[in-house]
Amino acid sequence: MGDSLIAIVLFALDVALYSLFVAFPVPDVPPPPPWYVGIPLAVCLLAAVPVRRRHPQLMAYWVLVWTVPHVVFGIGKTTIGVAVVSCIALYTLVVYTGRRQAAVYTALTLVVSLAHQIIEFPGEWLVNTVTVVLSLALCWVLGEFVGARRAYQAEVEARLALLENERHQATRIAVAEERERIARELHDVVAHAVSVIVVHADGASYAVRTNPEVAERAIGTISETGRSALAELRRLLAILRDDQGENARTPQPTAADLGDLAERMRAAGLAVRLETEGPLDDLPAGVALGVYRIVQESLTNSLKHAGPGTRAHVRVRHVADGGGEDSGGVSGGDGGGDGAAGASVRIAVDDDGAGRAHPVLATTAHTSVPSTGETAQAAGNGLIGMRERANVHGGVLEAGPAPGGGWRVRAALPVNSGSLGLDA
Image (tube, one colour):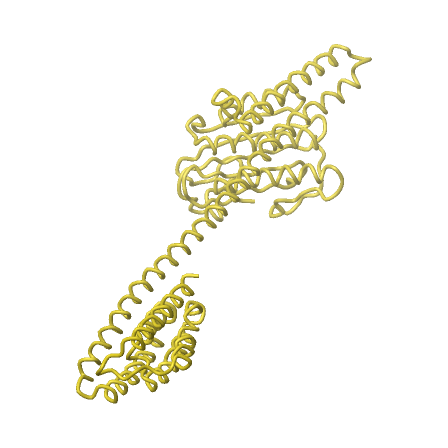
C-alpha cells in the first residue's frame, strides 16, 4: 500500500511539472515531448515501484531500462521521477538484496547518468555527475542503516522465538518430571498400604472362626493402615490442588523413619531386622525420602510375594568417604577397589523367601523380574519405581534373586557428586 502511494505521488508530481513546462515554456530548455509520449513513459517507469519489496532486482533494472527512453526524449529535464525512482531502487537493493547487487546497479546507473550528462550538458557534466554520485551515496548509506536495523530486528525475533520454544520445552519437561514424581509417590503409598491390607485380610478370613482375637487384631491393622494411606493420599491431593496452602505440606517420611516402617511391617507379619550405621537425620530431603521409599518398596514386595514366615534384613549405612565395602555387600566403587568419591547412603535389603531355597543363581543376574502372572507386573513396577528414585539422585540400584533363595536389593545414593558402583 505504501509503495503504491509513492508511485501515485511521483506520477502526480511528474504530470504537474510536465503541465507547467507545457504551459510556461522556459527559453533555454527544449519543450517536452507530446503528452501521449511523456505520460506513458512515466507510467512505465513507475509501474514496478509497488513490487519493489518483493522483487527488488526486477524493480531496479526495470527502472534502469526505462531511464534510457526518458533521456532520449528529454523527459528527465522536465520531471523528477527518473532521479527519485533511481535512488529508491538503489536503497531497495541495499536493504533487501545486499551490497554486491547494489554495487552492480550503482555502476550501471553511473554509466547511464554520465553518458546523459556528457551528451546533454557538456559544459556542466562534472558538477551534475558529482551531484548524482552524492545522491546515490546518500541512498546507499540510508539503505545500510535500515538494512542493519532489519537484520538486528530479525535476529532479536529469532532469539525470542528460540527462547519461547526453550521455555515451552522446559515447562513440558518439568511437568513430565513432576508427573513421574507424583506417580512414584502414589505407587509407594498405595502399594504398601494395599499389600498390608490384603495380607491381613487373608489372615483374618482364615482366623475369624478358629481364633477371633487374631482376626480382630488383623482387622484393626487393616483399619489403621487404610486410614494412614488415606491421610497420605489426601496430603498429596491437597498439594496438587494447592487449596490448603502451607498447611497441606506436611513433612515427607525420611530415612530417620525407617524404625517406624519396620514396626509396621512386623505388625503386618513380616519379620524385619533393621540395622543402621552413621547419621541419617542430616541427609538431604530428596535422598532421605529416596532411602525410605526404596526400603518401603523392598519390604512391601517381600510381604506380597515371599509368602508367610519370611524374614527380611535391612541394612542402611551412611558412608562418609564413599570407600570400602559395607556389611551389605555394597561396594564403594566400580569393582569395589578404591571406592567412589564423596559420601553416599548404601542400602541392602534381603529376604529369605520364607526359607524356600532354589538353585544358586549367578550373582550378576541383577534386575531379574518374575516373567509371568500378576507377580511379574507388580514386582516390575516396583523395581522400575525404585530404579527411577535412585537415578534421580545419581545413584544406582540392583535387584534380583539371591543365591540359595530369597530376594536381594542393593542401592547406593550419593549424598554429593561422585560415581557409585555395586558389587554382585
